[in-house]
Length: 246
Image (cartoon, rainbow, N blue to C red; front, side, top):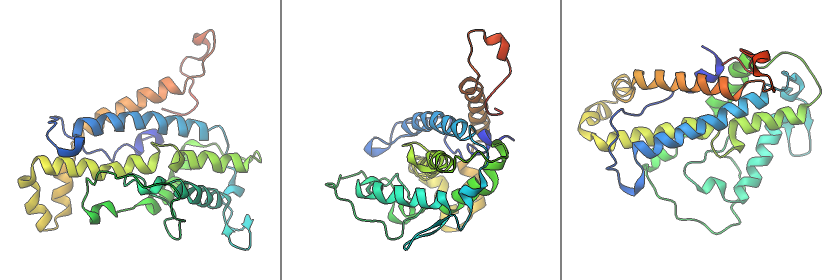
């Protein structure tokens, strides 16, 4: 399975959408948001593919300052998140920083966001797993080997894929919490026995709709073909040529 499909396997919404949930969060509204997020992620990955691997970007000794030592991409993401925290980004429960420790406080007036999830669910942050997956597995599948010296631009492209866009990988994956909550609220009686028994396998079986996942993968592959075309005045010259393998 190619890389543009792997990231969308984490999809758990129902065929039958019922707009019954309070606070305006429904399966239909989440579904439309998830579809829009696909576009941003695909464009971000295509943009990253413009650059080769550029391994010095990920060298643990590349950046050394009195307050930081590590990779360039770590430095770029950490500094960007610190700035965005000051602007209030992580006050939104839908946003999850990759480096939550010691973030500066927001300097803007707080906004009263609707609380959809219970606190234990809202606190779940799997960005460490997303980070490891992206750099250890994802990049090598769609980025060509090589070194063109554009290390800062490479780190910036990684940041776009991971976090900086409003609908990037992290937000897209963490949306699964909202989807699961909405599905549960529509049919709590179906889920409560498995929840009380802490039966993860049963819960995942209830939440997963394989036909919908296949539909998502087909749609994403088609988008990757459209977005990744080399466009010329005579498109026949580039038929079947894509910037990233769909």
